[in-house]
Amino acid sequence: MATSTFRCLRPYSLADSGHYSRLFPPNTDQPYDEVFFGRLRQLALSMRRKGPDPRVPLRVHRRLIPAGYTYFGQFIDHDLTLDRSDLPLPGDVVTPSSLPNLRRSFLNLDSLYGDGPDSSASGNLYEEDGYFKLGAALSNGHSFDVPLDRRGAPLAADSRNLENAIVRQIHAIFLQLHNKAMDRLRDFTAAKDLVRHQFQYLVLNDFLPRVCNDAVLSFVKEHPNSLFDWSGGFAVPVEFSIAAFRFGHSMVRSEYILGRDSNVMRLEDLLGGRGVGGPLSTDVAVNWPSFLERRDLEFQQLARPISATVVDSLFSLRPESIDVFTANDAPGSTAPFYDRTEGRLPLRNLMRGAACNLCAGQAASQLACPDSSLEQLFRNENNSSWSPLRACGLAAQSPLWYYVLFEAQLQESGVRLGTLGSIIVAGTIEGALWSNPASYVHKPTAADPPMSFRDSEGRVVTLLTLFDVAKFVGLA
Image (cartoon, rainbow, N blue to C red; front, side, top):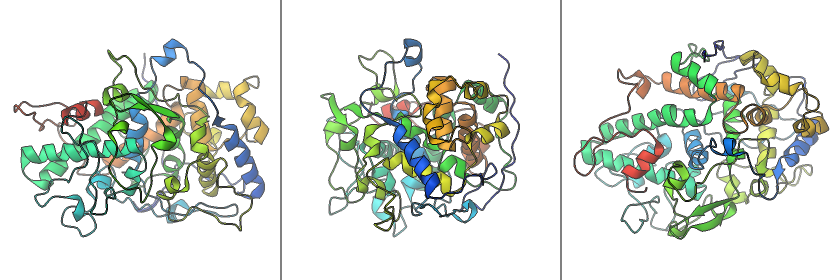
């Protein structure tokens, strides 16, 4: 099959790396007022999925993304963007180039390393010799949790990685990987560089192929870093941070099977936030083979198909599970039109997009992929999937986050992102890697995975996937 060709788009507006760029022209046709807020609220509530998801055809089920990549995506996101701004209310206008992104270094595992062992802010994460402190262990002696401070509070350079028990365990995997690198190299800087390169390799060669559609992925392989022209300087685009990369919210399941005894755990029981103390119980230890691999298993844990629906649990998140992401996310009693308990996560996403005047999905698609077959589906007035958008008066100019989810649902049956979503996600991640002169993609051997890890018998170990890493550190 011939490789699709995509135009190299110049971002609409650039910014320094400490703020946000904009890929597409702003949508100025829909002012973010209380009337528009009401439409967004109606659309958010329409996304609520109550009860079990409908069965998907076997041909689709076989292609669904393993559940672990829902949370690996969240871990990656925390290494790209850190926005502590308040939730914008109707009438607020947010200019991306003035919106601080506190994550100045991209895909360098700053969320893991912080400022290093010599820093007063993150030095308590380390032993004196440059190894990471580790947390609670499984029966095999391998740590599956982050360390605790003297008061029993979990420790991480980025508190968002403590927000739920699954991301917390991914964080613990990379703590152990660093210590394995230290065993081999006996030098903190060299070990950190190796682990960073391994992480970057996984993002580009394991994560992106799981979530991007074949046409965009093939183009990226043949034409690296050609989706967007970042020659003027890279900054994370708002279309990525508050729309496209939030596709993972629709992949979250309401329950997971965890622990040696295969406990069925509700999503709300896995969420934490700031101030949640004590070690993780082994009852919530992730069975990484079932979360990341699908071969020869009695049960496989797969993500929900990417779609314009979100599980019920994400509509009633506890405040402590939200507050970890912002400085102050409660508008207060002076805003009676905003109910914190209704449509919480989907509505937040739509509100942030509206305040930034994000380009409508259809307009962004016309700019990035005008030949996308999805446009035919979007013109089909008989498609019942259109009902929520039509009911809200948003069918002609769909919010970008919703469009990305809807596109994946219609174009890829939810097993991957659609064309526009894939372009934004792959183009941003590539831009972050290529803009960093110390990243793995600039190595002469960038086509190969890092090869300096060795097992207990001294043999070189090749880590091609996140499952390989979990197995290497003794957790799978």
